[in-house]
Length: 310
Image (cartoon, rainbow, N blue to C red; front, top):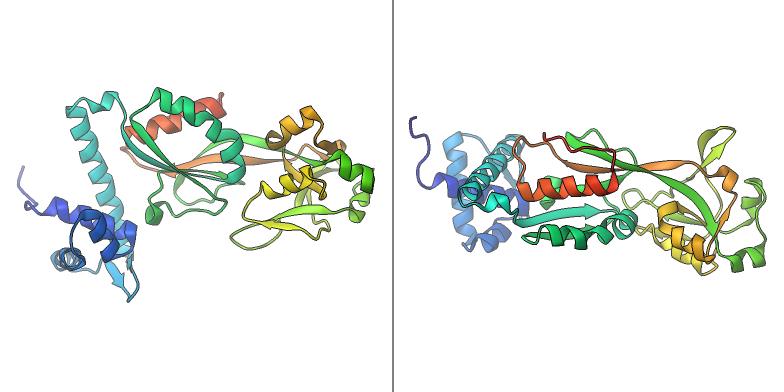
């Protein structure tokens, strides 16, 4: 096999990946322990070698060109393979190690995933986790995430999507609120109540309630003077304290229903659901620390699913 790379090429590719992920020569230099000028010169040498621009530079940041993004994706995968090969030689492959970054929606994170993290760490003590709880869609490449859980149907974005569950929705209110305002006996009766809403962080639009109507499922906008932005747990907390009626996931209020601190309203119109899926970039060679977390979550949250290597 001929030599196609000089001794500095591997380090140059690592700097390219760092710059792409940090979107800044200065930030990449800080991570690498170099000067911004050294990082800039390295990128310039790569661009000169390929005869193509890899980054668009502005006064505040740098971003990948289309050609640069395609090359970055290949470089990142190649570097992952090299790291995994070295770990295999050192015997580390038997004990997964390193950092995994996981993005979770607040509801599913608090009520489904976070309760499992202690057991995961006990099984894989060498794996460190960085958990982000947010209801916005993350950019895997720019923000350096390995896995995300998202509600609703995932977009066709080239990601692998594994269904975890269809989460049932229902309407709840506190006994105190229902004593003060009365219990609605029909959907029309909700018009006179305080319906607690959640607004999507990406658009600011209020999420309509999804109800079972006439044997089917339909969205229904309902009145309400209170809307929570970004945190879907907010309407449930408000409902617990008598502020109104909330539609939420059953898994979030199971304990409240058992103790009576919340009461189901109009159960005949429950039965709608929303899907939650595990998303991760398609890659032929996935780091084992990422693979074991995917496998663990699917095993615990989707018992009927089986992890199939990509």
